[in-house]
Amino acid sequence: MPLEKRSLTLEQHQTSVALEPEFWAELEAWAADDAASLTSVIEGIDRDRDAVDSLASSIRVAVLLRLQAKAD
Image (cartoon, rainbow, N blue to C red):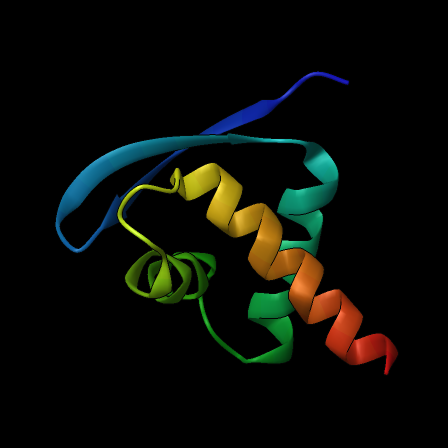
């Protein structure tokens, strides 16, 4: 499955993230559920991540944890 690359500005820093379309869809649903922007959801994940982890990996884990919590 091809990755979808998007450019974002996080904390006044331009970056790009490549994720599977399913992860982008879940992030967009997360933002809608929280009445927030996609960027603000990703900024929260970025702030909470370990400096050694990539942003893309941190996003995938955050989405997985959110889906698991919703399933409980």
